[in-house]
Amino acid sequence: MIRFKLKEMMAEKAFREGRKINLDDLVAQTGINKSTLSRISSVRGYNTTSDNIDKLCRYFKCPVEKIMEYVPDEELMLDTNQLH
Image (cartoon, rainbow, N blue to C red; front, top):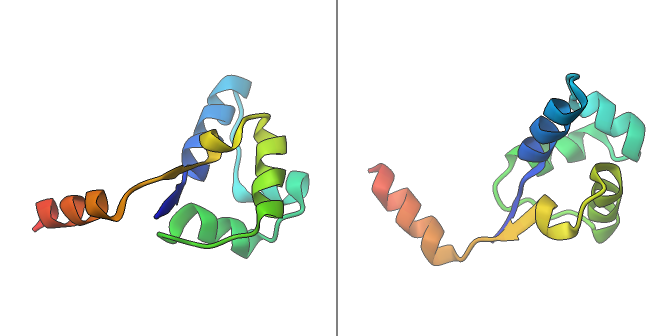
């Protein structure tokens, strides 16, 4: 499964710039719909377009691996089992 690290990237950018960054800022700067950004940041396994990933990389000035990461399904199952 692909895991997006949008919340982490927003927090890191906010810390570096000394200001609060929210989804409305991302909408204004990237042109990505707010509901899409919300899903990227909170829906596990959300599927988005490469165009949106490109816009996020451009906004955060980072490579794609900073925006998202691959998490094997086996690791997800282990994490879920540890919660019970």
